[in-house]
Each structure stands twice: as C-alpha cells, then as structure tokens.
Length: 117
Image 1 (cartoon, rainbow, N blue to C red):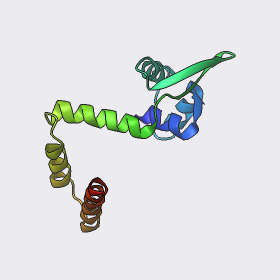
Image 2 (cartoon, one colour):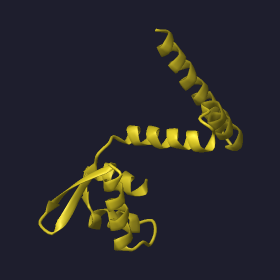
Image 3 (cartoon, rainbow, N blue to C red):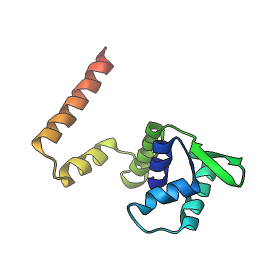
Image 4 (cartoon, one colour):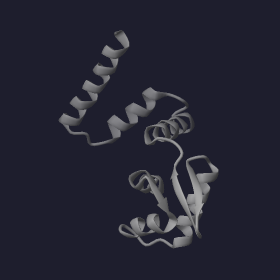
C-alpha cells in the first residue's frame, strides 16, 4: 500500500522516484521497491510502459477501488464476511474521541438517507 500511495500521489512514477519517497520515512533497498512494483503490476494494481531504460508506472485502479477490494478481502478472511464484526472491532478496540464517534454516526445517517431517497 505504501508504494501504491506514492504512485497515486505522483500520477506516474519510476522505481527510482518511489524509492526516493520511501527513503524519506525508512531505509529500504532499491531492489525491494522494484520487486514490489513488479508484483503490484502482475496483480493488476499498476501498469507500466518502458521509456528509455526505465519503466514508468501508473495506478491501474483508483485508490477507492483498491481500498474497497482490500477491505472486502480482510472482512471475508478475518471477520467471516461480517461487516458488523469488522465495525464492532474498529469501534470497540480503537480509542475514538466523542467527535470521531459523532462523525461515524453522521456518516451512517447520511448513507441511510441516501438509501431511502
């Protein structure tokens, strides 16, 4: 996800550009970033074109689509497909402020109103 975040932020990116951004927060080998980007491409999350000696990558899917797919996989594998169990775990185990809880309630109410319309 970290690599994808950088590619989304840049729009198009070489391995070198992503590697430089990752290095700002932690030490990681260039070849590790390259391997991750190749794997993301093989899984359909990135596309690439060769420009000279470099490969230029771009996101193959929008950020929200990837988030939904990964969350659905997590929910299926960890919570037996139950959105309720996932939400209960997030709300109970996190130290949410009253403001954050109110925000969540407002989101749920907004979704209910949209569904009723």
